[in-house]
Image (cartoon, rainbow, N blue to C red; front, side, top):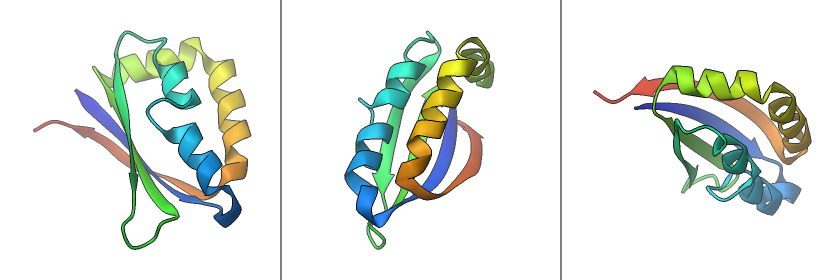
Length: 99
């Protein structure tokens, strides 16, 4: 299993929209569920900075995640553009494997 970890800072006026978009039942997870290799999403909010979040997307393999991005490239890019309005910043922390 691999986990893709991203850090976001939500815009002050868009916290609720951000949470809806990136939560386990949001449109990102809905898109990811098209892949049998997707294992779930966890959305974490920073206890000291309530606009800072981590998303942890779990996949069977990095190849499964790449396959989803290739197969649904147009939908992925459209959703990424739509969700940009909810964030001040976005950064890939990395891809982690279980030890």
